[in-house]
Amino acid sequence: MQLNLSTWCEVKDYLKTQKDIIIPIGSMEQHGPMGFIGTDSICPEIVASGISKTQNVLIAPTIPVGMSQHHLAFPGSLTLRPTTMIAVIKDIILSLTGHGFTHLFFLNGHGGNVASIKTAFSEIYAEHSLSNKPSSVHLDLYNWYDGKRVEEIENKYFKDVNGSHATPSEISLSFYAHPDAVKKAELSPRVAPTNQFRDCFDFQNNFPDGRIGSDSSLASIAVGKELFEAAVQDALEIYKQFINNKP
Ligand code: NI
Image (cartoon, rainbow, N blue to C red; front, side):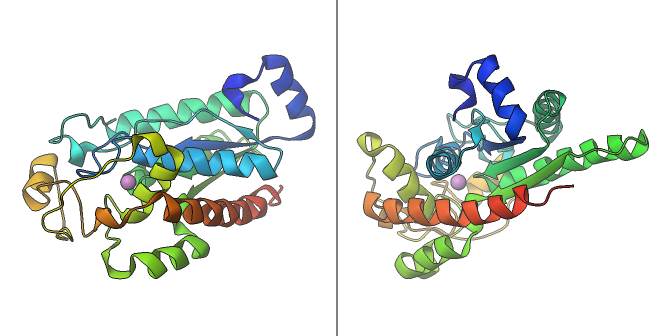
């Protein structure tokens, strides 16, 4: 059940029996010469839609832009400042909890979002604590790529060259989601370097084509299909534990 395709009457009925919602959250940032700029939003979105086919749960619209300041030297990348992102997440949480939702599950596709999402959660909990108002709000964050089934597939096909950005894993899943938009590119070097980074200038110096440690050319729709099925199972397992953690 998709929130953006529901009426307020349907949401009101849903809340009579269920108070959980999944919120996909991603980024809009370069993913090397082969990966879509929307990779990190597309991946959690398709995993969430897979969950909704096996579980009666409301899916919120994907939050499409995240904290991607380090990618800004590449055209098309968008970012929210950490403070903006924290404010956006807080406002979405407060909108939903105001209607009676108690279990909000953020299904994330971008590592750079984690600190801001966790800070937003702490801000919400701090407001409850400091105003001395106990609350039944439960907030959880899960990265679609963190599960054991996904990890097994990554190790099987990409082992030491999955890297940490523009990975063949995330690109495969996004290709599976959008087969008509699949790209090819000559990658040089085939496996991208690894290093630390600070701002977007430093990032571009260290990673001239935008990839970190990955060989994106191994990406395929076929592996994307396997990753999709694995990621849905992994996320569903964590999600069920989360919603059963009632106050
Ligand atoms: Ni990514």
